Length: 402
Image (cartoon, rainbow, N blue to C red):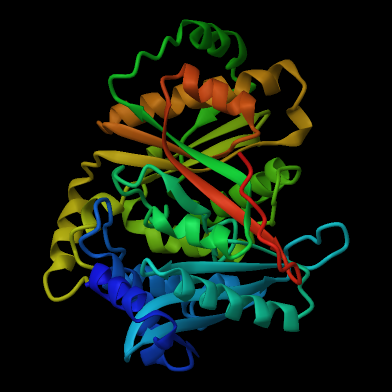
């Protein structure tokens, strides 16, 4: 269907109008959420997300983003059929770029038609410009702390929890609309058979983990306290990174609440010194490995399959979704030792629950030290995402950076 619709637009040329309409009702929002599977079903590598999961993020009445930001959604129509979607958002927590307001776009999905993508982007840009935005960046759903970037490589990789999927043609249409690639995000996969030589790390652990310094798992009896720890550590650790936007407490609370049935002790490693948390990693079992075949729906019977999967707790894959080391220990012997020890702990915990593939991502292209460490542990790049940017008011097309 997607290919037929794209060909129809191309054959009729400029006589075919693509209409952009704002999402204003619950019915519109339902169409917005279901749009990707309407246009991507049948494409190699695409697996539908759960409607329920997406609604928890995108519905202004439920999504934690809307406590500190606002967004608008639009759908593209051709001959009464939905052929694309996009969001535009403003985040009160986002820093300015050299004093200028940054706006964001996201949820960009469309058929393979340049004019449809250009119309969607132009609509989002116009709304952002009305709100004083000078630079637009994306895609993000709805924040850089959610799904980030446009999939550039790894389209046939296995689906992963909270990682987006886009068809190969979409990046080309974004660039032709005047956007340039400003950051690449890498997602690494470590397979169970990876040759991880942990002799040096074992020596580090023996020397450093002396009672004063220890590593523990997720405290299932005090999840609210864990949320506070993770929020503070993440915001401290990532404050100097490119594109940083502080994670709100409501966002990590929503994540914990929605994933509560699949959490267990080995879903986290927390590094403590004298009882004070100084580093952490948070790991999620890959919900996408089971729900990818649900067609986006839980009812009438898919919820039973999901419940059985959760009860058995036999996960084939998992993802490190949050990782951070406090700035106060950087530059110290302890600070240098934490990342390899954390990765060692994560790999071993993954083996304990028989995870075949562990995904670490995303990682900034420029974060070469972390990338080198992951690669030493046997990690290979599984997916590459790109973040694009455009200065509003610029009519010229900006080529992508190599």
